[in-house]
Image (cartoon, rainbow over all chains, first blue to last red; front, top):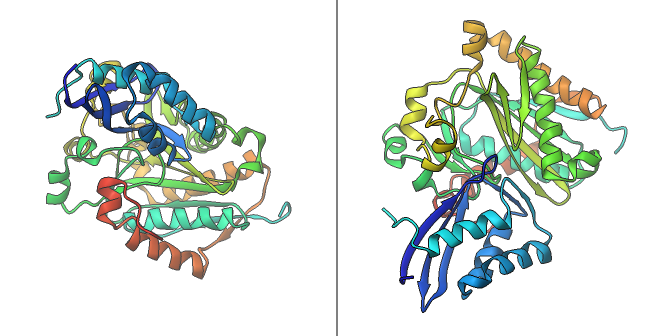
Length: 99
Length: 263
């Protein structure tokens, strides 16, 4: 795992595309942007998920997403905590280098 | 409000920021207690919209759009990028409590897209809802929809593709490698089927557009068991739409970076 900007995406069959762009500092997520053609309501929930993942170590990603979805009562369609976590995992494993 | 008729609005072709502004103004009206609204409209000039969560640089060839003077507008609704050209766009704003099926996102897409699919089918086409948010004919997409919610009300809007300029679609909308893998390497332009491919040049006739508007409004009336009467945007709705067109949907920070200005 190297520091720098990393990107990856995840598109489950029948689901929507989730793309994650992140940077690491000292092995933890320093900045993260989650984009794609999915639905999260209220929409500000995506910023809450991003904020919850800042400072997270890779093992805590799924639990942090689950907590935001539960605590804010977010409604999701075409996307799930699992597909967001999978996109983050792929990015952390090296992902695609940004163009 | 239970006996108040719903409003049916057919607005003239308008620029993208105004179209998105009026849809949002209608959502605000309904969230504030006004009667539900169904609207049909067109785009002049053509425009590109991207979903709330999308990165425009990734979805759109911004240089090509800028070269041709095509605006790129971020919607308040999720979903994907769309080149709005020769199409009918519908929108519906209604309270979540209008039907139990509307509580879940999946149930509301099923109910609302189902109504639109039945309207399209009245032109002699077998159109059906395809989750998450599409309507398909023969496996290809004729309509895509997106929604948001605010104050207990839902706004859903979507396209019905009348004709497709596939060269321009391909020039503006970037194919995503992950999506293309799943769908036999087809790009956005190959995955769609406009009405013209199904019923010929009759699709382009003004009467067909009027028929489809009426069918969509009638289909929503039947689906929700409510009368829908012809209406127009109110003065405050038109003013709010113009303000949103200028301050939100015409704002570079919003469109490029999802930074919402104070409204």
